[in-house]
Image (cartoon, rainbow, N blue to C red):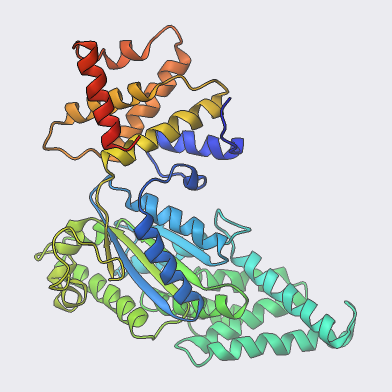
Amino acid sequence: MNPLKIPKRMTTALVNSLTAGVVPRIGLEHIAVGRRPEVEAILRDMENIADGGAAFKLITGKFGSGKSFLLQIIRNYAMDRDFVVADADLSPERRLVGTKGQGLATYRELMSHLSTRTRPDGGALEIMLQKWIMTLQQAVMQEKGYGPDAPELGDEVEQRIYTVASEMRGLVHGFDFAKVLASYWNGHKLADDGLKQDSLRWLRGEFPTRTEARKALGVGVIIDDDNWYDYMKLWAEFTGAIGYKGLLLFIDEGVNLYKITNSISRQSNYEKLLTMFNDTMQGKAERLGIFVGGTPQFVEDHRRGLFSYEALRSRLVVGRYAGSGLNNYTGPIIALDMLSHEEILILLQKLRDIHALHYGYEARLTQEQLVHFMEEAVNRLGADELLTAREVVRDFMDLLHTLHQHPELSFEKLVGERTSRPAETEQNELDGFLAEFDL
């Protein structure tokens, strides 16, 4: 029998996502291999953030090296540890800065993906505010002995809301942020859904003009392309103030900044990235973690990458004592190597068992067949090419689906027979292959 105990909802997400070649949102812990030092380094950063600090990490690696997988698994770990998380992929329409609202588009994407442990799929903004207000109400009732209908309850809760909000006022744009939070509370207290929705729209960056914001909420500013990152710093402090550990932002596909053809626009985006780096490194941000994924070219290219911007290059470049092949996991860059053949083989074992569990059959592929599949994949690419987990996984899922749907076909029919050699020689080579992988 299959010893795995994974909910059907999770195996469905894993099988569907991996078949399509995309990173699953849930269940990653069941297919994680390698990456222990990288994960441990980021978990240490999370401890610092929970203590009121901040962190900035660039996760770099070639296409297919597992950047998106690592960002996603850290996102899931963070929610389990009571952080608020938000993620967005950069694109031509979503940047850090832009003349056509691309920075605001990134903010809106992050806010739509705002997630917590109890709301892991995004859309957690209103849930967070409601939970905060309910927590304040319960605290006041317990401390003061008020009943739920006590007339003094509303005033006391409002005073506590302003106490939290007043701490925001010392920050850039903090006064307006606090005023909108109070508007949301008033909408809640008065059962005014219009006021609540206007407050949420403002917090999500959806008001197009200052005039409309002033008319609806009495605030003379809106979240826009220039100031959206300042509000992320406010959100980070606010999450800490209402009982969460902090806010983590996961921004993937940094290569889209590298692809910006206009040099002035590209430099403006790099300047914003520098601001984020400096804020987190110098203590200007609290309870905020920023994790950016990109290719080595995005970082290291001296003509168009981050290293073309001297202020960033000098902060990110590897120190003189970090020699080739020596990863410094405490530095601002975590460079991912491709998974080893051993790690990919372990991954195939996990996928074989998950596929069998999902479709309710006894896993039949042997260790020898998995090794043969790996050998074929390596030989197909050639010795000079690196084997990426993404390519192998898609091919392997295709193989598993085909074998399951066509039981008349054999593994050897689809993959091919192993090269005919004396049985003793073949067994010795297999033993050596497995010994190398410690399997």
